[in-house]
Image 1: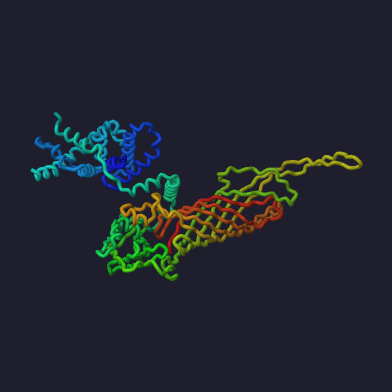
Image 2 (image 1 turned 120 degrees about the vertical axis):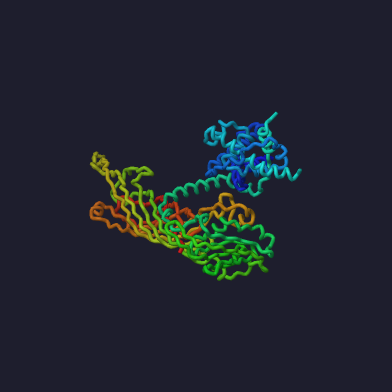
Length: 162
Length: 429
């Protein structure tokens, strides 16, 4: 029942499918080992989600790579006429996840934790052993990179559909 | 009204917070295997052994590398149009995987690949290099094994200097599966006899079973215990030998060894100090001995040379996911085997001859060391890496003396046994 959701979560947090499979395995091992802690079926899904996120964060810590500092100057300009909702609608969910996957590991993790899971910067700082200001700046950079990618690809698509 | 930025963020959240994707079904056996206690035990054993091996100087002094990722060697595999459909599921084209399996940095290393029945393999390598590919059919599994003999690689320390070249392995469907009618000679070719030279050093913790000599006039009242992990129990054992491989799992070995340990056994002897005589009836008397407790000690000194013969058996062909190499090939081609260690169990017989000559003082006290010992031993051996010419060895071992030529004059007999951790290396000749 939760299998596709858990794997979808793993895909969002990792760059490659093989890495997602590693996180998926680790998450389910943790789930099976401590499933007896859940007494209320209502809380099962958020519990599984939390376990999976923790497994992804652990994986990040284990396989921390040198981050490439991206030049974000190219993505910094905001265009008033961009209709991002419309642009996003041209992409499938898989394509959007693929776009998130291309983010550097730190950016991707912070973006997922903050934007999609709803963690605060203070919580993210604790989880990733970074400062709150680093969490904020990584989120901003992640957004700018994504925005740039969307603009670069999305506008082109949008024009094709026009 | 939300800003553009907020629109984008909430849209991402709406679209992706519950994003789902179907995982590969093959992940479940791996998860199940890792959930079993045995698998956990194996994983921790491997971690521990990896840690110990990392401390072993032999590991760092090795002149071979397993780091194929740094190698400039490249292997490509293509499937021909004639290929059987099942063949196409075999992905041997993963560069790391193939290179790792071939153990290419090792000079003249035989690397066996197991392929699908009815598939022949042609390896094309540059003419300037004297590579050779040997194809042999495995009667027991019905598969074709390929041994690639690769050119010599020059290395200094553990840094290889590799000759870069490309090779292409081409798989074609054979007309007839090569599974039937293998002669003994062909089987022998499949597992050619080869030798490993091994050298090990084993710190041991020695213990002994002590039995009083009931035929003498000495009464042993007590023996002072030594803590089980005391340094007083430490001994050392060195061994060097050859191991021959005649089958996929069984190996026989023979070696020479030197064993040394020294331990002082403190005991309390009960001696008759005096006799109290009491008159009995009708001219008889009752004698009651009074004992005195006299401390004594015995230096149990062993310096032996010996011969060691035995057999080992390869176990745990599957990795921590419960998958063998074959299963990775046919069922999970996308997954990479994670096995790194070769696991074996075995046992052997040791015949020791003492180098120690009993001195005059000991002789006068009635203590002489035995001159011959026969031990059996049982061990569990891990080798790292699984393949390659030079491998590190970690081998917990139990030794037990089942025969000693006893000295009839000794106050008690000592049968030594001990636990040790063999550390060493093996070199494939």
